[in-house]
Image (cartoon, rainbow, N blue to C red; front, side, top):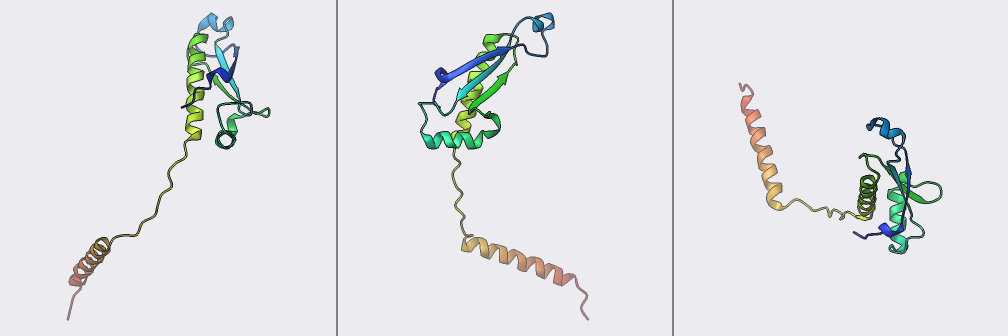
Length: 130
């Protein structure tokens, strides 16, 4: 996981939710912004991968953004935001291994045919014979 936290910028605003009167005067909601195009740590193909996988979180200016208001302190929300955006980008860069299809072995084929034959014989024995 690459640490690009130095490229992040932050905005704060008042968050909703628990906190009582404190909510009305303290800006605890943290919005973290990252300009993908100006990042120096990632190659162009990695940037394209991030843009494709996280396109619903990227605004018109090309900034990846994330809002965090889980805790009642700004510093804790800022730390959580950095942690979440690093994890988000790390997951976006993950390329799953392609599945290689295989054929069933001879033993598996024979076992399947034997089972079919046994079930067929069992059903055949249930019929009334003259």
